Image (cartoon, rainbow, N blue to C red; front, side, top):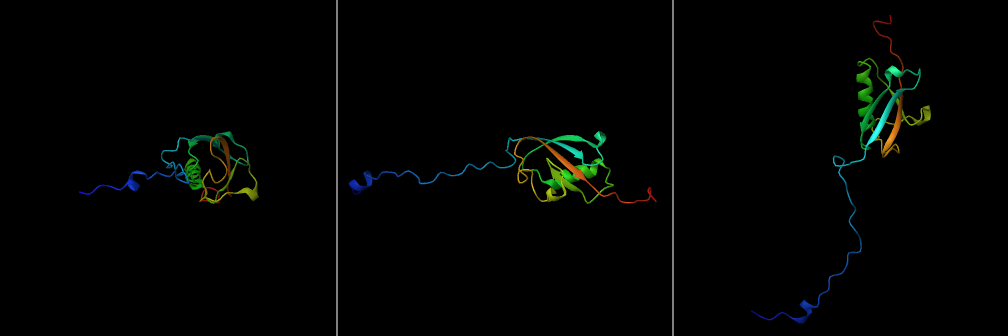
Length: 121
């Protein structure tokens, strides 16, 4: 076996130029949102409910909860976060985080067009 050269001993480790980003998977995300879901008009406290969700929660999940609370009798919901205005209707594919809600409390307003059914004829 041969001797190692002095150059191998003198190698100094350089510090990394960049730090690795801290990535938190959504299933480990500890942030929590208390979302109060309300019918926009007419105001009816019987249809109001509160859920705890994560910022990664999709609007489509909340839409499914609303439809379930109405017994499946509604569709084509319009959903707005923190303020109800026709220009601020959010897509079902968006998450609460994409709507600007990352923690704390928020109000989710919904509205729908009544559909005539067998009971209304």
